[in-house]
Amino acid sequence: MGDAGEGLVDNDSKIQERMEEMQKSREKASQPAVENPELLRKIESLQLARKEMVNQLEKTTHEARKTQINAALAEIDRRIAEMQAASQ
Image (cartoon, rainbow, N blue to C red; front, side):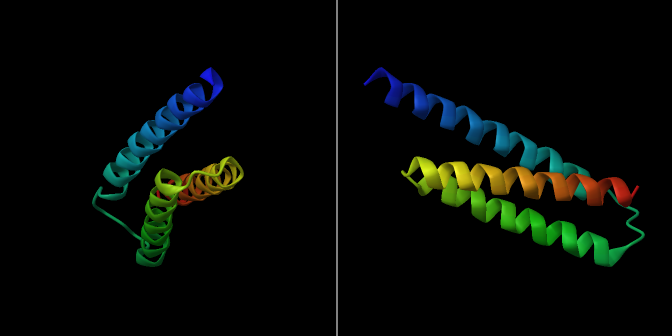
């Protein structure tokens, strides 16, 4: 049964990491001088989707679903980073 407890700790640390990444993304997105409002809208949309995925991750108990959500979060993070890099 120790494995189940370790899984919870791992998931909690992943959630904490995601929350910290979200905060960094939010801070970066709030910087002024956006030249491309359409790009900003897309970034904000991805950030909203990311927030919803984090909420789902916190609520789900199925490991397979958690794996899917973590993969989706990684993809969203990748897209946000690409768009933020393109906007600079």
